[in-house]
Amino acid sequence: MFHSQKTVAAAAREARRSLRRLSRPAGDFDASRYFRGEHDLGFYNTGTKPMRALARSIHLAQRERWDVGDAMAFADLLIADRYLEMKAIGIEVVARYRKDFTPPLLVRWKRWLSRNHSTNWATTDTMCGMLIGPLLVRHPELAVGMRAWSKDRNMWVRRASIVGLLPLVRARGEIDLVYEIAKRLHPDPNDLIHKAVGWALREAGKIDSGRLERYLRVNVRVIPRTSFRYAIERFSQGKRRRLMALRS
Image 1 (cartoon, rainbow, N blue to C red):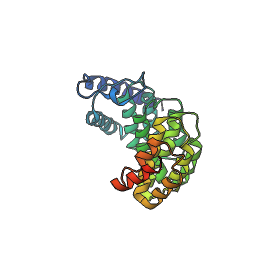
Image 2 (cartoon, rainbow, N blue to C red; image 1 turned 30 degrees about the horizontal axis):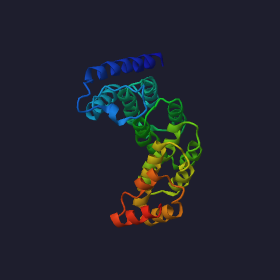
Image 3 (cartoon, rainbow, N blue to C red; image 1 turned 90 degrees about the vertical axis):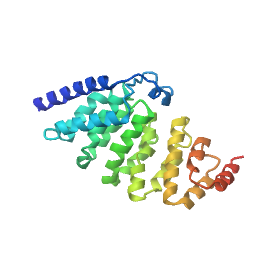
Image 4 (cartoon, one colour; image 1 turned 180 degrees about the vertical axis):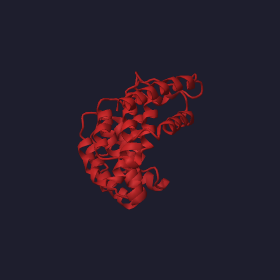
């Protein structure tokens, strides 16, 4: 165990050094432009491909020695870092052990969110797409727990309550819980929640567009405008116009 801890800590230190070497001036790619209000979030501006290549090399270097527990210990050291890319490296490495995901990991990932380690929509959504969602696909009985997440005091937990369902929607076509949690989140005051809900409704509409249209018509007065606009994006121009007219 002590040897494993030393290996994990050394890998985390090397990941930090490697990302600093990959850092580049913002130039045309200034990640900070995509994040409003996250004042303490740092950016190496590495770009996605170099960051993912680094995560892949870390996994390849350690795969004979690490299990998912070691990968989580590694990610625990990186997720609290202020730099966006450091958080992403930790998540990417853990995601490579998805075949070994077990239900107790959901508690740990929620802890990352509730302690504001995600600190931004991109990290939160990456967690949902690479960690939380794949776990729910493997253990769909856990999905009902997202109901409680939707009422959590932490905004990132609330966003994850619906974005985390999207892999389940795509893999199994299960949309009932999306509508239930969407309704719970409509009163939320935060625009990042409104966007997430609209995105999830749009994905649910790919499974059953008629159900989405009926939901929008029935709940037109309670769905925030941002959610509504996101939800109708895949409808025809004429249908979008008619649905938006209902809000007048």
